[in-house]
Length: 550
Image (cartoon, rainbow, N blue to C red; front, side, top):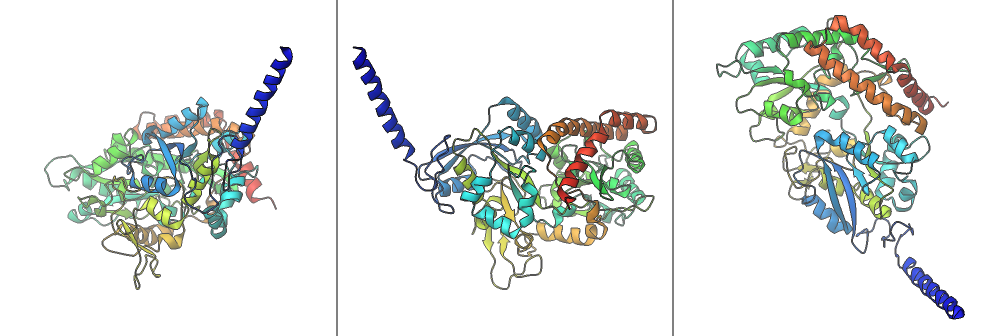
């Protein structure tokens, strides 16, 4: 009996082995044989990406211009082309950062994390832990459009490669001229015209304009309902200090990091920053800045700008869509014009500048991905020019078309494409700049310069004429940096504690909740106790390792 038992076990083992072997040989095309899922991948560049439909679970940052990612026309088109179905989890814009942090700490990961701009610090921490898959081999084996992008824009590969040599996330490459100088102030021109006011050129002239907006009833309804200036704290560019602080000291990006003679520094602990806060405090004390500027979100700010009777005079922001719906029926978005950088009391007049066109961390494949090859191929396909055009603007022949002979682009060269439907409103046709895409300067400025679609030509003109003359020199701009895993772990806590404190204290100083003169030394002391010096040392080490190797 014992002999037969042994023979039976051997027979079962043999059958299982044969069946397993058949299963492992069933993949076709470029299947790498990954144990997570043996998907029949077609050869690189060929569609569909998979012969048998697969599903990817994607966590995406919500986009107020996208009605529903699941029913979106571009999503359906992409799924049909690739044979990949996307199971979406959408993180609300307002709480997207918290949602991402919660997911990363949970241990339960989607296949793909898209649209969050995952930070270099997070990439190094979760990349070295194996949560984020390194993409180098996938790029080498399956990359078609990604390799083309790297060849045409070599800086892209350099900027997304971590110190350990790995690429943990795919970027959005967007050589957007007006985005390089995006910290702008927008002012309601009809009010300037009605009150006979010139465009302000100094901080004090700007104060006088805001006073006139507050007291002279420019909307003509006989009510004191005008809001001279407002902002929102969610997006740095919309904050009250984003544009105006550059009249006192260089105030770049949300972390206010800069280069000072090759040394990494910050603006927010300098006497000039304090002077800028004094100016903002004086505007607030005179009722010229709305108290809601420190609590409301982007949609609430836009509601101010879109009120039936105009009530909002000015706000800082990337474009006019900060204050009113781009291409909205009211047309009010076109009535806001850019204010040139204002000269401060000591002659400072700067435009913050960031020429680095690579937005990293846009597409991460996690260790939970059952079909990592398919997930990568999907992202690679999105760098194709036609796919980028569809993902950002819509269907060719409906929302956009290719340019005709003799049509001229925004850059004065022969045009490449023409926008047919206004961009920026809520819609369900495209992803509105979510996820991987590849736009060179020639591609962006190759849009037909058309008066019936004035957004891009207007932003180009406003930036060229008003912002570029005052842009800071490149040697003051801190490039995007990566950190070692040890640096990243240490920096994660320092970054949050320090920048949360700065943001909180800007609001408290401006509103008068904390007296600026009495509270400044305590604020500086708190920054020291939060180890600001170590924070800057880590950035310096990363900068030196990247740019001072020789």
